[in-house]
View 1 (cartoon, rainbow, N blue to C red):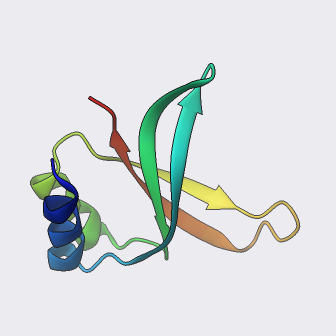
View 2: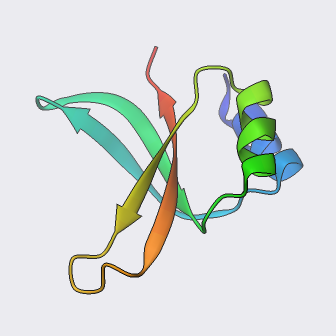
Length: 77
């Protein structure tokens, strides 16, 4: 999936992000994450239909665990 197609899928689903980075497992990059506000179920379903291999994680600050963000993760090929 190209970057343009990914950004189009985000726009159609209503997801906006303010940060991105890598998800690593044993030092190897396994996915790219996009950090945004809490996701609604409808947004998750739209993203799943546009990007079948997408998965979702949660993120919290260590100094303020009540502040939560959603991570939309796109696995590497």
